[in-house]
Image (tube, rainbow, N blue to C red; front, side, top):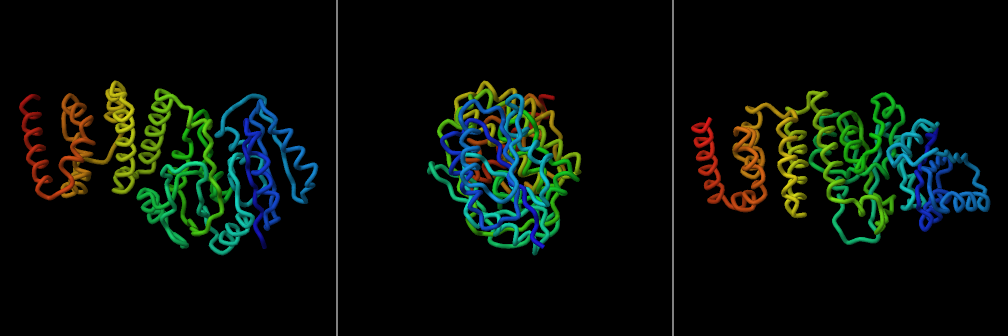
Length: 357
């Protein structure tokens, strides 16, 4: 039997794009679906456009328009969609994007065969030449939580919530709702999903068109707001991993440390080095892998040892060391001879730190 699919579309000020988005859903070859549209208190003509399209097209499958009394954000809108859905599987679609005509049929056929918690299709980008995280895996089924964790932490599939067919029972059972009042919420949600999933099905076929808009929420963020959001995400993913006893998993630990380093680089490249003390204070407060594990994993991996050596220093020296990690990685990790130079540098720092304690 074909699984019933709920397509969840949050709507907020997308009047120029919503018609093409909605048409891409109405034209699906797969018809065992419902569309759930959440009006997140849009201030433009988006809902009027939707109602006009629906009146003209008169689709045969059920469509709900749910009204938010106030603007609550993307996470809350998606959560409203989850709670009001009837589908065995859920599909999140951003209202300024589109899907291929065979998107739901392609993904649902895979779900029927694999009974996966999550089915992931490929996507293309329109409107930008910037780098976006690719789907690196070919068509395949990943079984077992440890293998899924490894694939996600090694960034083999993308973090975005859209274009993923997700079993509703999996979301509800594991309380995998989106965190409210959070921008970049997909980073946290996808991490949590990877930590819980037992079967993921990958199909290397383009099913989603990701359209980059110049005035999107993420493109208009101030550095301060962006920094605060990523601090929350760092805290949440670290504590979530810790609650599942995953911080001593090499792939999980390395993934989290790379996220910290990305935020450090953001501070440096945006010339906001005044934020680094705040970032490092957070890093020292967050739980991490045991020291002997770090040493065992990274002793002969110079790039990662440079990244993680601060955990072996006193707080005073650690902060001044950490802000220079990107520069040291560039300097020491390219060649073997240069790597030896870092080991000598590290020993000197450790001796100096011990003498000053």
